[in-house]
Image (cartoon, rainbow, N blue to C red; front, side, top):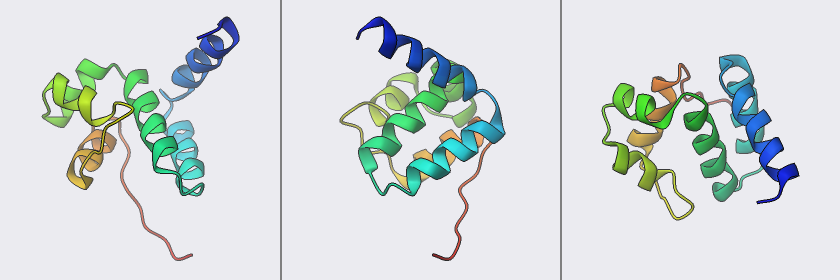
Length: 96
């Protein structure tokens, strides 16, 4: 990862500590209909809050959380719900 990419990632992660920013970010990613991008976004939001702390709040093992949000992860809806709740967010549904 080059310095520019690392700086972008650090800036993004810092912004994800704000629930309003995190919600807007996740919503924009959901609209892309790209599951890999959504997984990355969830991982960034979790990193912003500290993966170990998110795992604790979500009632998940750290390894389970890391695996679920890894590049090859495939988290269940229950896991996504727990992670979102752990960072002060919730899943919302709206008409297209």
